[in-house]
Amino acid sequence: MARLIRPTWAIRCVQSGCKTLFEVAKLEDGKQQEVVCPNCGEHYVYPITEEDEKNS
Image (cartoon, rainbow, N blue to C red; front, top):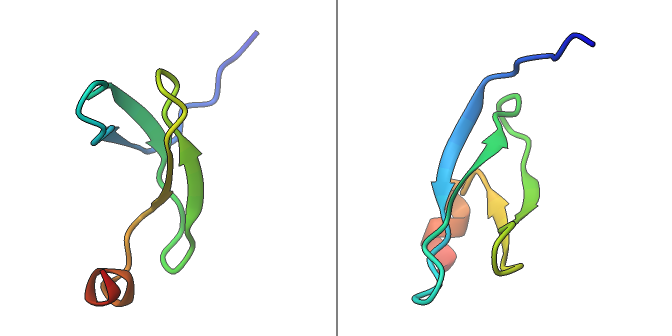
């Protein structure tokens, strides 16, 4: 079976006990996705927008 290869980002979980590095699909500009760390289950929204950074 053929496997589709998409552009991906590698992100690291920021939980102090986890720090797992995992891949997420790179989306079109302006789109975000919710991803879950496969090790600890922490939820993230990527990519982070400039507006999200200002609000944090």
